[in-house]
Image (cartoon, rainbow, N blue to C red; front, side):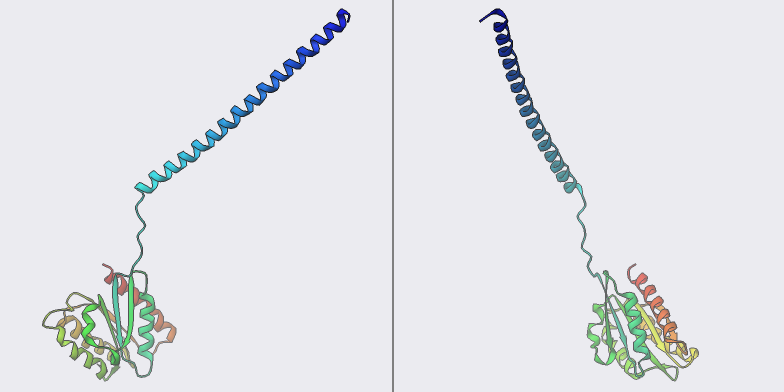
Length: 217
């Protein structure tokens, strides 16, 4: 073998060794980079978990909404007008914070009146006065008078009448019974007379919202 052939062979071996070395370095570098990326991802995950733990520790717990107030809407209705008013008032008052019960006065036992935070009483107007069915319930509520069990509770009153004068007279009688005798906080009532159903419904809903504000105080 001449000198040139030996040089070619030697150079070939050197290049081969160099290439092997470079491949080894690249392989080692890839392993390092892979491990570094894995470590970096793991660190980020751990950091997110820690941040989440800290946030949960200091974050205020979410409160569940529960009905904290109970309202009774008690009515008598012969033609259906007063019943419509009762339902419209009830719809305006219902919420997560207020539980509304609507009852025909003839099917209600007055013994449970103190269980409610607010009482709304409705009657048709007959000769400037309330219906006898409503008067009967008021008379029976005397069992709560001596103990002042209804004192301070919010009261609403409403009536359907032929004229505003007769209706206002009826409201005065309801206010005397609930406000003066039972010492309830009576919110000025409403009279429906000669208006369209839509107008009456709107006024009843507005009245219901006024009652809610007073009850939630």
